[in-house]
Structure formats: structure tokens, C-alpha cells
Image (cartoon, rainbow, N blue to C red; front, side, top):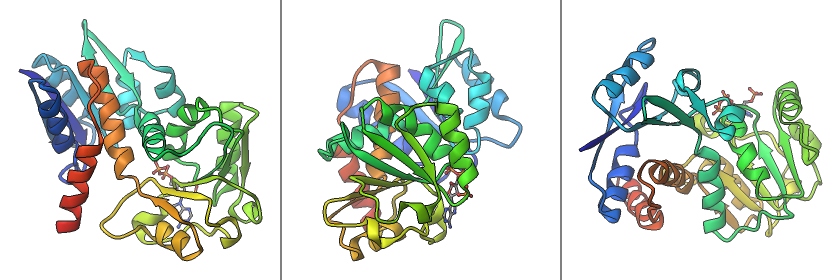
Length: 272
Ligand code: ATR
């Protein structure tokens, strides 16, 4: 049976095996997919071991996404610009590297019927998470994407690198009173229970607020946005399943349905 892995450190928390095995069942695909803890410095060996097993592919999570980029023989444009690879495909003696995070986000937004074309988007953060989603978001033809970051120089560096007239960089305080259709929290602040220091003046009932992370309760950013009057708040569970679906489609050439898997994960999260 075709072998797949998700490599990470830590990895025990990964939902990827559950998601990919659910996709395989739903699409009638025969495959093995399991998580593998990889010691620091052992990533290349882990990939080579999978190649020796005639494995077909792997997902890659923290902290190995940059190493995965370096090890790939062939890179997709979106992986190159993201500076990170989350999907390796092992084919014809070559390692192909791709990054499906941004497409996972875009597909989740579209699944929620959020209009991206001609929209004004605010991205909070300027780390790997933002870099990974810029190209797929730009491909949806928004009017503008503003990257606001605590450390403004990082946002500046990102827009220099992407060199697209629709991109702006600023600090959190400069977003005051601007009009956005969609605000995406891509900072890691939620993970430590913190909020990016943005003004409530940019929240209203029409603006959609999205957090790339998810948790059992609303994330700090989404619960704050709701308190400030946002009516649509969405967490990153759909993005997680979405990026997996794009990886699965690359490997198996069949696109799985995401909604049933998102619902199963939501149920498991609420029961945990
Ligand atoms: P990731 O790969 O998840 O994007 P990262 O590259 O370490 O992780 O980037 C983390 C992002 O979250 C950065 O934009 C960081 O802001 P700085 O560049 O100023 O460090 C942002 N971040 C982390 N904690 C934050 C907080 N409490 N408030 C605001 N931004 C925060």
C-alpha cells in the first residue's frame, strides 16, 4: 500500500493522520498515512528512509518546513515564495516540494462564501504564516492586502520581497479607522492567549474576522472581535483540513470533500 507520513517535532498533537485517513476512506483510496516524530537534525534521514520504503509523499510541519524546502529537487512557485514546504511528493526519483497552506486558507474562505475579489484584506503578522498565504490570496484578485505587524520592518521586508502594488505594510496602530472587509490573524499571539494590539475601530458587523489557529473555545482574537461587534468569526480548523485536502489531491489526483471531516474534528474537539 502507498505510504505517506507527516513529519514534525512535536507531532503527537497532529490531526493529519485522522484527516488523510478520512479522505482515503471517503474517496476509496488505499493508503497508509502516519505521523512520525523526527529528532532535530534528522529530517533528511527521515525523508530518505521514506524514499527507501518507496513512500509516495509526506506532509511537513514545524520545525521542518524550511528544511523541506531545501531538500526538494523541484519547487512550486507558491512554495518558493512562501519559503517553506508542507507537502513533499516522491515521484520518478525526485522530491517535489509544494506549500498548500495558502490554498487551504483560500478554499476555506470561499467555502464560507467570503468574497475575496475586490476586497480589502488586513493580515495581522509578518511571519511564516503570512508569507505562506500571500501568493494564493493575491491570486484571488483582492483590491489590497495590508500587512500589519508588531515589528513593522518585518512587514516592510515582506512587501519588498513580493513586490506587488496591492500590498501595503504598517504597524498595528496605523490600521485605525481604515475600512477592511476581512481581517486575518496570522500572528502566533493566540497560541499564548494574547491579542495583537489592534484598534477596535476597524471592527464592525460587516467585517469578517478569521484566525488561522483554532481551539475548543473561540480564540482570544475571535472572542475579542465578536465583543467589538463582528458578526462573522471563523477559526482555522477549516484551513487545516483545506491544506490537507490540497495535499491529498496532489498525491491522489482526487479532491476529497472537506466539510464532513471538519465537522468530525469539531465534534471531537468539543468532546475533548
Ligand atoms: P509563524 O510561522 O507562525 O508566522 P513566526 O514566524 O514566529 O511564526 O511569526 C510570528 C508572528 O506573530 C510575528 O508576526 C510576530 O510579530 P513580531 O514580528 O513583531 O515578532 C507575531 N506575534 C507573536 N506574538 C505576538 C503578540 N503577542 N502580539 C502581536 N504579534 C505577535
